[in-house]
Image (cartoon, rainbow, N blue to C red; front, side, top):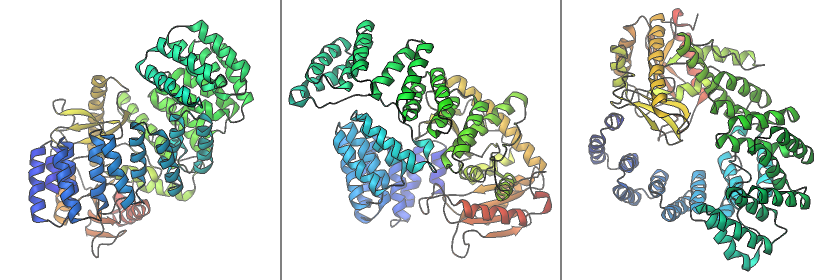
Length: 612
């Protein structure tokens, strides 16, 4: 597996496949080998071969959840919604505890236009997995797809009540008023409605105006149909008719929140902020739950690139509802979108004071601090002061933060960076959210002063599965998160910025190594870090001074989670029961990590007792 990883990291897909086939021949009963091989083939766009590997493995391991999921992912990856739905349905039937299978099935149903089936599935899923926030957010969006705004609002409010202490930051919807679809227009209106959907999709607004008028004649009391006509008028340039129609809707349905929001948005779109403010204030006064709408309209404006308008709206709403978390969260996301990281930290701090135990807010706050500190270092050669502890933090939290700051990550991925974040520590480091591809690569980098990193000839941007830009060295020496959404920046300028960032962090790491005040952590996910590898790593560290290494692996045999094995004064091995990217034991074990850090700090010689 290590040879496969090395070949994959260096972009040698043929070599990775060759190593996989050797491993599969040697370990025919290892089901993990099938998923690794199938994943490699999928990444090479060889989906039929990947399917063949998985079908053979499924016959051998019929109870393997990993294999069933990988088989469904193949169909999802090629965009075959019908086949993906069939495969995800089998995963749900065989492994009903797999929440992702429900979300993936729902996505396939929407692609197939089966909105009602999607809604029913997600209703069932939200009951099966009441604490799974992503499923519940999908349930809100399913109502929006059907243009049932009131159902969406009701589900949204339920989410705010249920997740106020946990995941409020994730509860975003693109817009409460996008994609208006169906009304009770009866059989006569069904064909008109379908034709209207087609015209809207194609952007044929004159035809949409005509069809909207016909549908409105059938259901004159339908506000959503009238608003579709309004939108068609606007898009076809008939502003006067749009204004007249909206005035009529407002006079007939003054308490309809959709019409009120559209009325306020119209003034805002026209740049008449004095009138927009009057309309928003009237809306806020009329609807007790209007802060929910304001938060979502703010999110929609941000997604449309209209961040300043979103800021103006959210700022006004926050003055009225200072304790509405959804407003604070979207206000903070706006600063993220503008890459104003100092302001983002301030806004996330405000959101954190409302929901101090929300891990998602803590994560976003930490990301903003990370960016702010690195940008400060790029500007004047040194990072800003380490992030202040959370306001009102207990003494135990302060102690844990200090412990976490006594360590610095050397990879192999971003897990230890997240552990530091959970401890309230936000240091910056070259490998805090990065990896070198292998322990051998890290040894090479230590021995050569990290000179290979940041070479423009080999440094490239790519898009991670979560839609974020990543950056990697094409030789496999470095892969790192950027925490910037793909498509939100000019790529060439961003790449140059990231190369400068690597150079700054490389120099900072060499300085930290020379100071010998931190304990350096290397985590090995796929295989246990051997004692010889640990000694080789530490020899690289000793080139810079008397540094201390903590190597971390999954527990194995008598090497139990939470224990420290001291090989010599400056080399320790520690063990955890779960790792974030492990197929064997997936998950994050912060409490085990915290115990390791405290014990390793106590076991290290006095000079490595933390930052001075």
